[in-house]
Length: 123
Length: 113
Image 1 (cartoon, each protein chain N blue to C red):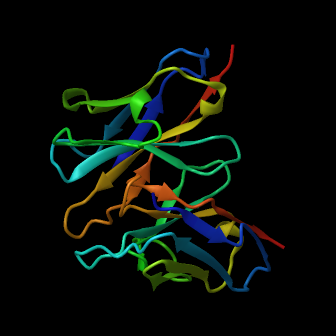
Image 2: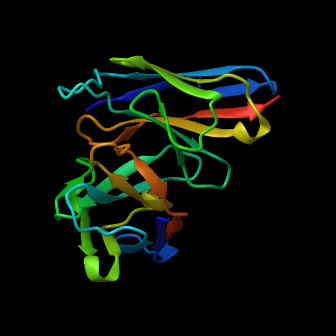
């Protein structure tokens, strides 16, 4: 059974750097066909994809946020870390991590999501 | 960048009645590999999104058969044949064909009359 859980601060000050950790189980992030992505959702608004990392360390970023994002993985700990610099109140959102598999026969979608973690940016 | 639009943005349905949501992409989602990279999610109140449909029309295991997806190119539809109370929430379409790699629609909120 695949599970993912996001952890991180609930409150950050403007201009600070946000660090979120996704701890997962039930799969190995060690091949090019498996990935973990980050998606966020401001209160009452739509979903926005942020970043994705594959088991071969291939990384993808949203072009509009690329300069502020870094995604890394620690395979030994089954964790994926997202950092976002220069946080602003508009970045207030629930941040989700999700599993993706692109092998033949897989959905290719973000098929399993964590519960999400709410991050408020305010002084 | 591919832009995803959905109509309607809100839908109120009588239980047992059908519902239909349209999703349009600004560019074709048909890849040269023959696959179309369009998905449907449901986010129930207070929950994370759950995948319903992948590849336009393939239901994820465990998804009731009252949900169906159709379409091609730039025009797609999610249909619920008979809406049940547990189907309330916000429905999102998502594409994974082009940069940004993953783009969600604005969402369609479905509630029960």
